[in-house]
Image 1 (tube, rainbow, N blue to C red):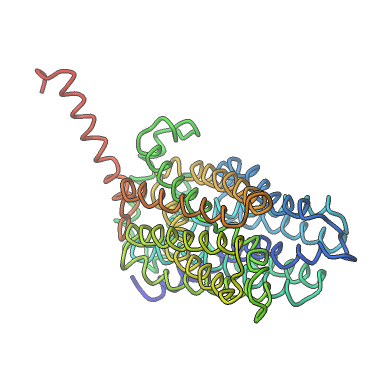
Image 2 (image 1 turned 90 degrees about the vertical axis):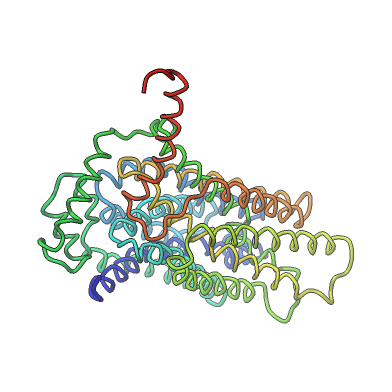
Amino acid sequence: MTYTAIYRQIMAAIIVSMTALASGLAYGWSSPVLPRLHKPGSIIPMTPDESSWIVVCMELGSFLIALPAGIIIDKFGRKNTLMICVVPFALSWTIVILTRSVTMLYLCKLTQGVCMGTVLCACPIYIAEISQPSIRGMLSTSLISMWYAGLILAYTVGSYTAYDTTAYVSLTTSIIYILPLYFLPESPYFYFMKARRREAVKSLSYYRDKNLTELTDEISSIEEYVNKEKSDRPSLLSLFTEPIPLRCLFIISVINIVTVFTGITATYAYSTKIFSTTSHSATPEQYSIIISVIFFLTNFLTTFLIDKVGRRVIVLVSCVGCFFSNSTAAIFFYVESKMDVTPFQWAPLIIISSYCIFVSVGLNPLANSFQGELFPANTRSIASGFNAFTIAITSSTCLKLFYINDTYIGMYFNYVMFAFFAGLGAILLYIYMPETKDKTFAQIQRELKQRYKIVEAQDDELMDPVTK
């Protein structure tokens, strides 16, 4: 692998992940901005309940597009789908700038949710398909790094600039990626799936920095893999009826559900609320910025660990760490509801920061990596859509439960729930999660199929012990 090939793959991953930066900016917008809209004399008066639905609307948009997105990226291409997202992104921020109503904000966040759901489908697949196995894990985590960069931008700009200024910055960020993205080649796997061999070879040659002669073996391997998977016509039903896709779907669903229900989306959206009762040595907005920087730096560190340590170890450490962090947070917030904890108001920052480190080092970035690695080529896009669907449902549920639990039970109960899911995830993933480090797509599929071949052979022997 040449330095030019590495450079091209890294730059492509960064450019494509700029769509995730735009998504992270849109998602993090609510944390610094909505509390200001609750205050008397705000430019868009709203109640806390109305603002909670603004947060949920983005997840609803992601839910609506999730399954169609899997079909769209297979029909139009991964890159083209991401380019199309610039239109609704720009339109949504234009709505924020030009209107002053809660209803229009609902529409804005719904539209941004559609873009976010599409990005979550297309980005992991594109990055996985252009990357060589030795750096695929590292490049897959760049998506989440850019998401966190979007959060930092949202928390910083949203906290220290006017409402309209925040919207203008968000609008600019949402459209600047289209030019560099335009010049990137489409995924070679997509071209091979569409029987466009010439374009596929050209794309692969660009990302491998090799000529046709040097690529003969890899081209043959990819064509054999893609043609074999294409022979089985993909459908949503096949995810639930075929052993390999079903097992992969179970693993990815566990990772996604556990990641959300350890509290990551609630931390994104309600970080200002979480720190509203802490020490006044810093404002809740400043705490939110600190948390987003921790998210970013930890995920950046993960990019160098994921292809050295392996996915499985990192995810299990992440789950166990999230369990202890959330358990400690539950204890603190419960004690806070019963007695004065003024001398310990520094504790939430330490506790939540430790959670951010653990969830960012494994669960969150690895969800995207596995999404692009585990599924066969013929179900990868459909599975990606279903995964986005799962994330949208669980995130919407988690965000609404967070508000309800905090209002009617207490903040501590949210962290009891988060700790439970972290512990459950550690157990399930220890049992079922495979290792994919340094393996090609074909190798991963062979290893997954090996288990079922053994089972089938045993079943045949039990049914007809005489026949060999």
